[in-house]
Every structure is written in structure tokens, then in C-alpha cells.
Length: 175
Image 1: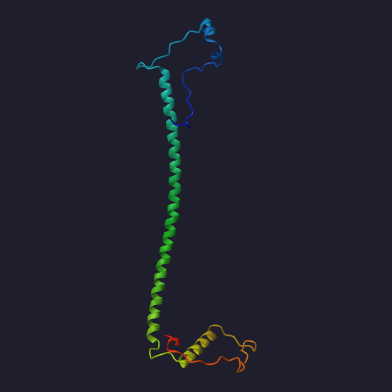
Image 2: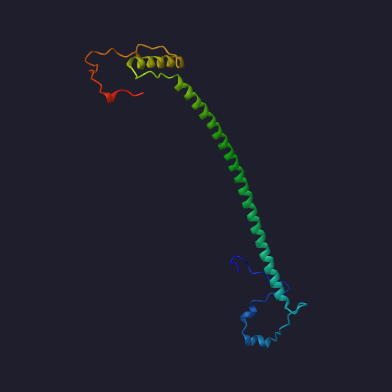
């Protein structure tokens, strides 16, 4: 049996007075307490046993009802969590589809950019200068601003300039 179960009261039976237990047995015999016969049920079992069984059944039914209520609450909470998680999965699936679409458009842009890119030999200093000038023009279109005298670099003296050195084949810039 469960330790949480409370003892059930026996129905149809009067409680005994606790003071009776404090009287010695010899005093009880003299008092003339006669034991009454217990009433019997139709099948011959004492009525107290049936009452005790009914009490136990009632206690078990109460426990089962409480347990069922706890299970219903847990199920409702799990259903709510499932609905939230399904909404989150749907949102993430939508974001994933959007990212796939964006990736496909970027790949298409890359293919068109690669097709228009220069393919005629090694990179030269003139090519790099033209690319730098093109980048500066693009930046000017994005962020138009007028250079002030403080933005311009100070002229370098010949002693500040680095000395040129010969480039080996391994130091050349790669495409």
C-alpha cells in the first residue's frame, strides 16, 4: 500500500473510547462489558470487512482521479508546448526557404560577374590602379563627401618612401 494513503474510517462502527484501553483487563471483566456480535452481510462476511473494503476502494478511486487530473494537466501543457514548437519550426522552415532563394540569386549574380571578369593574363599594376580608381568612384557614389585639407595625406619626403626591391616569382600577386 502507498505510504501517502490515510487510514479510512470504518463506516457503521462506533469508535472506541481510548480510556477503555487504560483500564486493566481484570477491571474490564468486572465491568460486565459484553461483546456484541458483529452484523453479517448476505454472503456471511462481517459488515466491518465490507465497510473497510469500500473505504479502500473509495481511497483508490480518489487517488486515481487525482492522478488522472495530473495527467490531463500534463497533457494540456505538452500540447501547448507542441503548438509553440510547431510554430517555431514553421518559422525556421520559412527562413530556410528564404535563405535558399537568396543563395540561388547570389550564385546567379556570381556566375554573371565571373563571366564579365577580365580573363586576359596576369594582373598588372595598371589594372590594380584602375580597379582602385573604380572602387573610389563607387565609394563616392555611396558616400558622397568633400575632402577637407585634413583628410588629404601629407606629402612624403624622399627619405620616407620605401626603397624598391625586386619581386621574386613567388611574391607576385595571384588572381
